Length: 489
Image 1 (cartoon, rainbow, N blue to C red):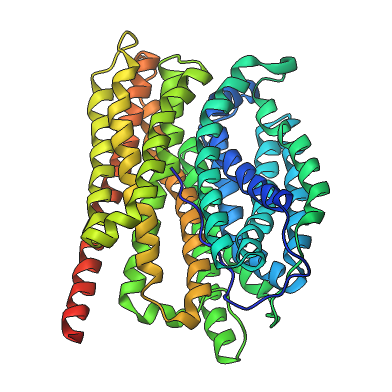
Image 2 (cartoon, helix red, strand yellow):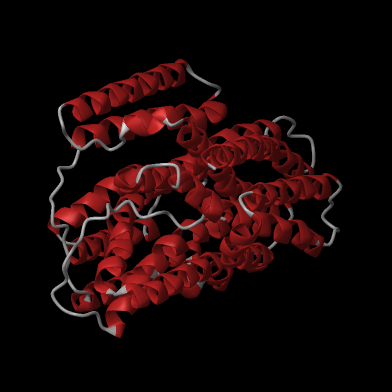
């Protein structure tokens, strides 16, 4: 489960032209719904997409990772564009771009075309999504804001469930013979409605304009893309020489990005990332925790969806229904986690991560002994534990990490952590995918079901190790917080 990205908007005061209507709230929530819906629905449709387009595992992994990567690296830029040019205007532009890119996804005739469309869809989501948080913050008073954000959290949770259950149903119904394409084409009428009705959203801008570091955006985008490409394509192509060159070029561009951020800070500009944040070891460790935890979520659902459909022969709807209890566990834990942390302290976060690791380990153990005749409902319990653990760990961990920075850096820190969530998901898909593909193609003489079961268990080794490492770092953070609290007494 992918948690709600944090707002990258800085806490600048903004003024609205008129009070918000119930329709305005509905449209903002609708915008949040479709961006998260499209993140999850692809997992259920991915087996059908692979079969229909003759796509490789690298192709379908890029369909998912490309969306997250584009979303993550452009999220801060999208937030600042809204601050500068108006949140309603950027919401409408983002929604229009999201609708058009959904059309391109729906009519894609090849894996390459679908990957390009998903990259554009992720970029559109990065324009759209920050305006939702910022608009809700400035168009409501404190009481109304609390209610609006509560509704947004519920909406995003429902979007995750709908992406799996409704998405599976839509694929299986094969409406108008469209198959998997309908999960993207359904966005078109929704997007048109949202663009038209978005005029009811009060316009708002930041009082103080901030320049956008486009040079930084380009450097980090190209750098991460050049790192991601060889990880996705290398196992499929046998690691040709260009994959090494690509990886080195990506590292060079990221080094140039960091150097540029340092120079821009010295010149008094507004960098994408304030490197002064990393002088606080607690923030650096916390950011690494976020990267590790979020690198496991998307890859788990991708590999599990392929196991259920391509390996065990479940229909898209049946696979989606099996995912649903995990989402319910995540939502239930997310709602209760703040109260649990308030009562028992930050050790709840470590407990949540431990439950997450237990769920992953449980899935690995159960799938090792699985056969086509096994009852797949036996997998529900580890999925529920897994989802509940994610919910207990993810949301409080984000609050813990952001809590380490000074208030004046809170906006840029939140934007960076949001980017780490999405980029972590993209790279998790590529790293787990290396294990998955190597095992899946190792011995063609083994039955298909057995190969998918072994490939899933092998891929989850990375996920389990990543979560265990995150637990160790979380415990270190908790000891640091406890030590500072005791020292200040």
